[in-house]
Length: 260
Length: 177
Image 1: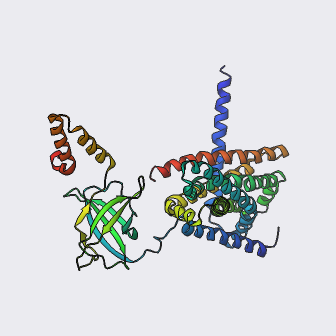
Image 2: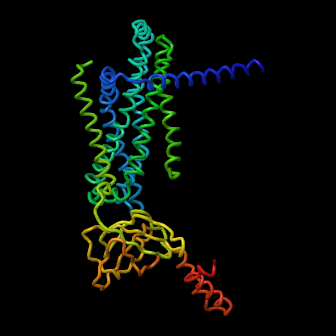
Image 3: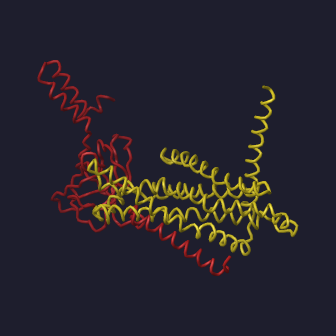
């Protein structure tokens, strides 16, 4: 019995230590004066790899999410004779919740896992330590651009996601199910507020972007330098990101609805 | 990896696409118009009870939106609600003796202020005060009055209670204080 208590303690200390290491990694890669002329091209490369190349999955999934939402919403709303409220339903649920959350989870799967695998493989093949040997700081050369790339890409992807999802809802609601286009847009415009709905959604996406990028970078950096270590680090990135995004989303929503 | 030039142009396209999406979100989806605030003048009105009136609620004349509510405050002396209304510049010929009433759009809709124009030759200007105001209808009070009216015919004691209750509702703030 008493033998188990130290195991629990060890487990807890190990977790806290990892958390502290992740915080130090973030601090050391972010709060260091960047070298703009050298750093900016690296960040742009990462925005390309993490953001631009994720566009396809974001566009397709947001279009289908908007269309499905419109179909389901129309089906239920027409029971109450309130089908003209389809626009507000879709726009509010997408800009407030679905846009930031689904984008962040897709982003973790598409870009976060790739970042983790890349960094972990660099570590396993001792590229990171050879950089240190050549007096190149791997935090500045490898970690920081990947973090900033994710941090910048995720809100941009969220904006595109929101618009495409609303367009998908427009396709289904107006073009297919035959709502009036003017009613659809004007009800949406009167219900959605820029600051309360759109901006709060974008604040969420900023937080999620930082979170996912941080988790991806940290899991890659601490991965065991074996093939199994890389595999489990990649898995952990996706799982931890999804959990962190959903948990943080609840916290942020409470703060925003509580009149923040 | 492609050359840096190609990557930069793709990233540029990506950022432009994202920000045009933001513009669409702002103007097409959320109907943001207060960004370019329409010029106009501010008019003040005092209401006994504003019900559920909110900031940015529309001001209408005959159903046409002519402005919006910009501030809601409480007058410390008279305990009346002070409403500041921003009326667009092109509606600069509203008679100064118009009355303002708080109405509800539909059965469950939001409150808005309806101005009813009268016949005075003078017009509303920056800072002028609307004298004739009608408070919001509160559904609970209407139901209360109705119930008292229905129950009033049965006994004299109930009728007396009815009288005092109605008095409380109409001018009762002084008695309560």
